[in-house]
Length: 186
Image (spheres, rainbow, N blue to C red):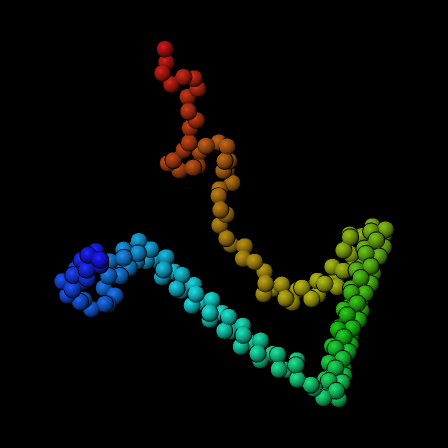
């Protein structure tokens, strides 16, 4: 009993203290000083994850009422018919473009074949390969080539006596190969 009385005496001797959270302050500051950046990164990651999940939930909630509500069967049929008609129209346009492209390709191939035959005939007769093609093209080129002729009064890039292997004409700097043999003679 005296032990119990002694314990009571000690409690009575100590004045009652206000129970606040100040005893956590040293341990929290030590934890934050050690792992502060990790805590910040985790908080940012959790925030971004929550934002991402909210965005996904909002898009799911928008799309789900459309699919879950009962739609009028006639409107579904009309929508599908309109979709089929637009697909058919786009396919017809594509087929028309493909047919036009094929016709153009056939005309080009026929023209090339005709030109080859003309070249072969002119070669048989002993004329040049281009033969009539040059005569027909010369009349067109004569009018346009007069304005498109290159200038002939340009200076050449190097003189005619230049040879890259000779070593002269290179100016003040010239490369010479190193000596053969060991660098220290003896």
